[in-house]
Amino acid sequence: MKNIAIIGASGYTGAQITSLIQADAHLSIQGLYVSENSLDKDKALAELYPVYSHIKLPLQPLSAEAKAIIVAEADAVVLATDHQVSLHLAAWFYQKGVTVFDLSGAYRFEDVAQYPKWYGFEHQYPEVLSQAVYGLAEWNSDAIANSKMIAVPGCYPTASLTALKPLAALIGDSLPVINAVSGVTGAGRKAQLHTSFCEVSLTPYGVLGHRHQPEIVTQLGQQVIFTPHLGNFKRGILATITVQLKAGTTEAEITQAYSVYNQCELVKVHQNQFPKVDDVVHTPNCLLGWKFDPDTGYLVVASAIDNLMKGAASQAHQCIKIHFNY
Image (cartoon, rainbow, N blue to C red; front, side):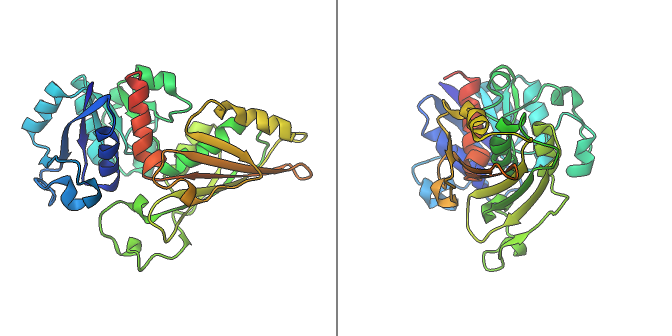
């Protein structure tokens, strides 16, 4: 049984992965941790989330002593923390020999020059960054199994890349256009006026400047146009993607491309049948639906995931299972 420490357990994603690990017979929770300055320290997780009343663990402050105990007791650490917090914690635990599953963006780019532009900080650990692998579970399983630094993808990139990567050899000269809508839990638990439920109305944001756009581009290997939207629902993502395929592409070739998922338990593909957010909420699944117009060469593919599950916690759980080979 592998012992897992969870740092940032008070947030939506941290609480979600705590629940997944608690329910996994191959794993145990070494401890739940929050910042030493957190107002949630020393509370029980169930005080924040009564749905997790079966988890009888306190939220401990991440002191120097606590970090030393994690190194001594844990096989891995999950970081459900802010990007800049993860930047330092991931490097520290990795250098101590602990496997790291980081759900922030601090280790998703190989190129250090991307971090000042998209995350607002200089990456101070290039030697650790060089060892990080991108945790897109269905595509990078060998690398995930063999690295002790796993950067779990963002939620929008997970939905988009799962839909587009099988089509890479079929995409023509025009850019894929990704319009994606996320529930408000994607913004985290911190109170903010623009994500207050009474203030939310369907709207685009981060237009032509969202940090997940270069993440998608890096992993897909070509430019895209990505427009995220905030929707007035709690959780889930629906990405509707329009892409022109190479001249002469057939439906049979598209079907063959998506057959890469035939043996994947969590990714299901349907032609001429499109998913909705409610189909995936509270599940680790990704549902894809596509339709092709042979006259114009345009394909529309919709990708639905739960942003807190396949877009974060359950994909991290997948990576844990892959890494520890069960």
